[in-house]
Length: 219
Image (cartoon, rainbow, N blue to C red):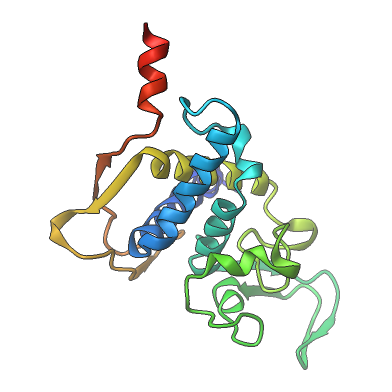
């Protein structure tokens, strides 16, 4: 693998995942508000509600994790995972000889109606139930690949995506530029799957902290 490919695989996929997640949140304001409330409830419960969300908070932000997983399901940065068969096998009624290269259609697997209810619907709640609650290799969820050759940086990438999204959700409202009502979700295919039209939005600062406590602490 060339150095350029390693760089793109380690950065382009993560940045695309962040953009897709924010795009879905902008198109679903109720889900956005629920994700923000979870962050604020956690911060207040920590006994110090005058701080920003931290990376160590991510394991306790279950709904935020579900939001990111749902975005990864609908918009996997890499839509196909190439593999080479080490031995002859039979899959789905097809004989695959040893040494043949195959590509697993991650995009189609993630939208298979036999696996997912309402597969084209953005519904983070599905990741708070049953077999898909934890892990990256649940049936039908293959955003990071699967098996022994799944992405070795999956845990790091997932944490980075969650942390970036949490930081943008906690203290900012976002308005789509150009006066549009929502984000257009058409995709552009290249090394990774990106939004066809770059996401351009305007942040609007919101009150993150308890203002009364801030005034007392500043005296």
